[in-house]
Image 1 (spheres, rainbow, N blue to C red):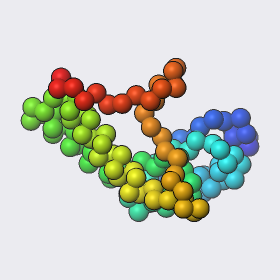
Image 2: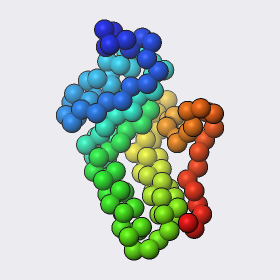
Image 3: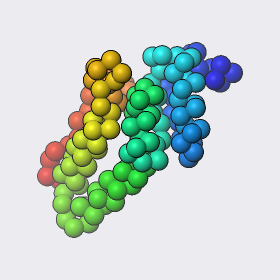
Image 4: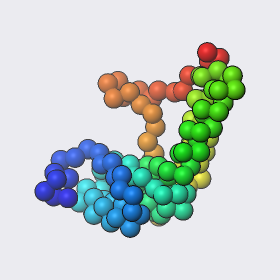
Length: 131
């Protein structure tokens, strides 16, 4: 981690397929930099919950994410307006995230990644329009 420059990193994305390797990288990174934003690939909901216990900023469970993307494609293909379909999927994704995160080890609500504009720092909300 040190040779890769973890001390000056602002974010880390962990994409390995092996859950034990992901957990090892997350643990090492968090030990080196407690305030680092870490987004990690999770195999499923159980693995995502484990990663939240290891204090990732966000875990992306591939099984859930694939289902959400399939659902979005279906909604659009049956005629639901794109904006509504995307908004619906974003809401469901947030519900899953909150359920998987639970409180941190101190009982506090966990910090979480939200869709934001890198240029302005303002939160960007899904388009809830009909088109």
